[in-house]
Image 1: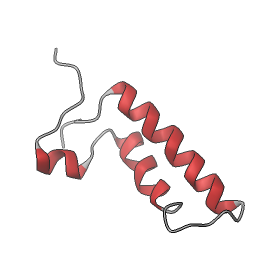
Image 2: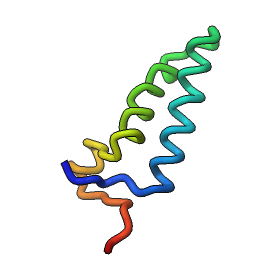
Image 3: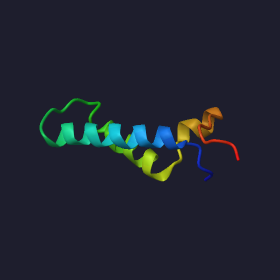
Image 4: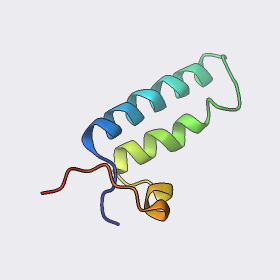
Length: 62
């Protein structure tokens, strides 16, 4: 698994994932709130399966 999620993309995913999970934990439940877990995990790992399937890479080239 090669990283395909860039730094800014990772920060956005982590923040959004945490916000959605906090919403779920505080009772503001919608079906989208538990999607926060997936968003958070892809941000922490730095690899996104749909990006890999579509050939998207937001990492900067070295």
